[in-house]
Each structure stands twice: as structure tokens, then as C-alpha cells.
Image 1 (cartoon, rainbow over the protein chains, first blue to last red):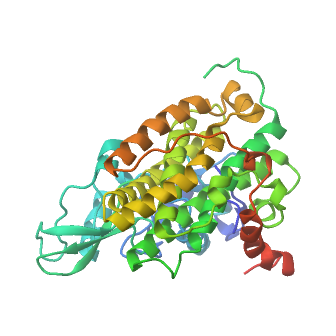
Image 2: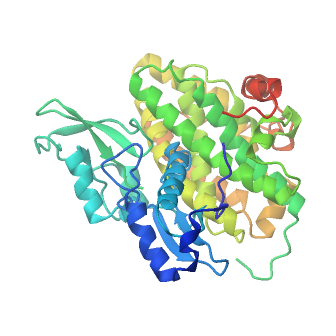
Length: 185
Length: 258
């Protein structure tokens, strides 16, 4: 276990060459590095596609700060992502940085980008319904999902909980293949 | 909530945050016992996922408790190095898994409690608790959907599953009283705007549970006076066994890391 709090992080030293660069240039350099970090469970998507990067800014302490949100509070991928982000930032010339955890406002599957939703579907995972901040919709259940392989609407949910906290298990009754659905949260 | 609310006592806040964190941690640990033993692979995954979310909540809460206390205890020290009497979860969470019906019954009762509590706590004047509650409640909605679906299937299922679900409910119901019995600490947290009034949480919980039991064709047992005070550190015999297993490694190899 490691500490995770509202906003916690430790400064990490990176290549010193960038220390003199303009803050805007450091932020601009950080984004493509972050976009190269894959989600460990769904490697088709980057953490930027998933909407996990909440902000990139240079603070008054001169550190480049990256704010990351967890998808689910207990998701084991969260720590892997933190380490991957640190590794990626060290490869670039962004100067000294820190990575902090942002809990509030809570991450929502609505923040997955349009690009991210397209990549999910291509990967065989049905993207989440959007804008389900309405609890009734979450609790009452689901519209019929189209099978990502044969597009049939004759599908059923097998289990609310799949191989990772963020996905549910479904099955297509037409092509008989199982598939996953990215839950809206 | 009022900007002029009285100051929050940090020792009281510490104990209150432990209550919340311990409930999540002990229930998460209990659910973890099902891994590899569930009736079907899907339920194995479902219960393990819920356990993981609960442990995630516990990590956030225990980390916060340690910071409030300010004596250098982090989430690990609080989880692995406290004795039974320093755990403040309501004892419903530590009740044994029993059969699948008993596990599901316990889960419905606690999921509905956390749902109603966290929804209100998202407006807490304590920004950190508000953030943790707002994040957790999204996950708890899925937990309750899972557990209440199962309770309806068991209750409105065969004669055997109905009888088992009802007896689980009869067995567990008396422990729910403790969840809502407000003591000085609960009142202090409500009066200072940190937590909602437990009476309000109870009323909402009660309506929600009635609706689920009705659909499940199960009878709501009567409330009975209770003699348990897990929230004050007085536990049933079950907690010691949970802690013995959970804390064994850390106590045998202090400060072990992997």
C-alpha cells in the first residue's frame, strides 16, 4: 500500500536541463508524454483517452504538477499508472515534477474522450452510457447493448462485475461470444 | 451547512473516521474469504470486486485518520497494528459469511447504509470526507444493485432459497440497530456538520430496505434492543479471528514490504 490522499505527491527529480524552460513549454511537452502512457488493463487506451489526467501545471514552487484521478478507489492499476507516469515524464524534458492524486470531483466515465470511446469499441469493449449521473438509470439497469462483434442487440448481462472493477460481463446470444461493457460511473 | 458550526474536535474526528474506515475494511476482508469459494465464477468476481472497492475506501479513510491523529501512523500501521479494542466498526460487518444468503443479506444491509450515509456526507463541511464520500457512493450504487438483485432472486426463488434468505435476515437484523444508534460521537459529528444525522440516514435506509424486502417477498424482522458496541471497540468474538489472519504477516515480519 502507499499513501493516496486528496492531493498528495512527492517531488521527483528529472533531467535538470529543462529547469530554465518556460512553464508553458514544459506543460506542452508533458501532454504527449502522458498520452504515451497506456492503461495497464486496457492497453488500447492512454490515460489521457480515459480522462484520468485532471491537470498539468507549473506551480509557484517551480514543479510541474500532474493531477491524476483513480477510476475506482480500490483499482490496483492506479499505482501502476502513477509509476508509469513518473517514468514517462523522466524521459522528457519537463523539469522537476510531482504527481498528485485528485479525488474531487470524482472521476466519471463521461470523461472518456470521443477518441477513447472509439478505441474501446475497436478493442471489443462496449463504451459506457454517457451522462448517467442520474442514479435511477444506474440502479434500474441497462438498455440493450449491441454486440461489438456482430452488432446484434440480442445480448444479456452475465455479471455486473468483470475482470476489472470498471467492466461488466455480457454475452451475445446471436454469435454466442462473450464481451465486456465499460460501466458508467 | 452552517458557516458558524462549532469547531470540530480532532480526536473525535479521528475516531469517527476510523469508524467509517473500519466498517469498510472489515467487510472487505470478510468478502475476500469468498475468493475461490463462491457458488459460481461470476459471483467470485463480483464479491472480489466489491471487496476491492471496500478496501479502497478503507485506505482513503485510514490514511486520513492517520493524518488527523498526526502521530505518524499511516494506513498500514492503522490496519495492521491496532488491537481489536481499537477497531470501531459496527459489528454487523464482522459477522461470518455463513451461506451465500447470509453474505448477501449482510451486504444488502450495509450497502444500503453506506449509500444513504455517503450521499449525505458528500455535502460534509469536511472537504476531505466529502470527497471520499462522493467518490465512494458511485461504487456503492453498484454494490447495492448486485446485492439487492441477489436478495430478490433468493427470496423470491425456491422454497429452500427463500427460507435461507429469511433466516439470514432474522439472524442479522438485530445487528443493524447499532448502525443507527447515535452516541455522543455521532451527535457531535452531526452537530458540527461533518456527518448527517443518523436518524435521517435511518429513515432513508428503512424505506429502501422495505422496498427490496417487499420485492424479495421477505419479512422485515422487528427491531430489538441491542447489547453490542463495536463502534466503541467492544466486539463479538469474530473480529479477533479476522485480525489474526489479516495482521499475521505484518506482526511476524514487522515493516515487511513487497
